Image (cartoon, rainbow, N blue to C red):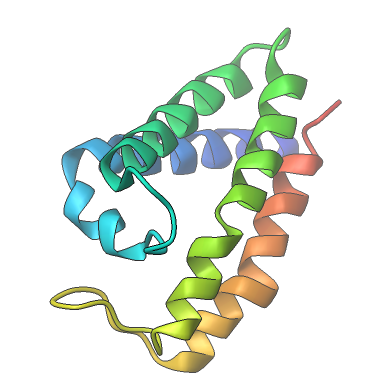
Amino acid sequence: MLRKIGLTVMTAFYLLGGINHFWHPEFYAPLIPPYLPFHPAINLLSGLAEIVLAIGLLLPNTRSYSAYGIVLLLILFIPSHVYFIQIDGCVDDGLCAPMWVAWLRLLLIHPLLMLWAWAYRK
């Protein structure tokens, strides 16, 4: 029962997060490191990937692939978390968080999200 609840919550988390990339792209765009090209495309592809992977979690035949895909996506998001730390946890005219929160996201929350997805790979 807990496993099913965890899967449902994770699916909702990535589905809503992916939709939010399209609904509020201005929130995510400043979090993309400046050395990466094509910020709008990266933002939209990230959102699309989250949506597709979330839907894949719902289907038993694709759940494993989606779980691995989420882990890969989270690895690809690491530069964004590092960049957030480099800019002292604040983006211009946007999100601002204490540095301990920025470090917590990178060193604890992000790995826990990876482990959560990894738990559904089988």
